[in-house]
Length: 166
Image 1: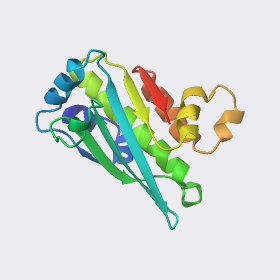
Image 2: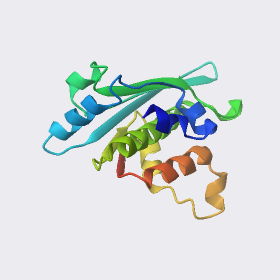
Image 3: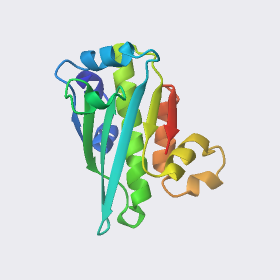
Image 4: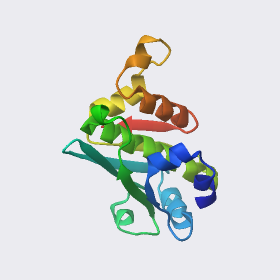
């Protein structure tokens, strides 16, 4: 997985920020996902916004509570939220986390040839709803706040089965 991550454009690597891959490259995580009667990949993110700066933290796992604290059964990370200072907000932070989870889930699925669907969650339901419904086919939509991240996230999730929920 680290090679797939390293092959991403530098701009996407910068968006991801810090990432902790399991030492076995996610093999144990894949087994945990596949042990479920309905194999599923879950990702959760959270953002912090204070004094005009935002950061994000996230985790990708099987959804089992025991896997969240097991470093062999999750992929996690975090970093700063990118964008013009006037655009930084808690909403952009939450969207940044969802975007990062989409990137990491895609890497995981490609590396392991997994067909498990992905569910991503964050604190702001409006972010996940907009990820699912934003129409980017009109010029008007290209002026929307955070459209850069929505377009990138949409492009990445078309490559995987991803459901967003708030």
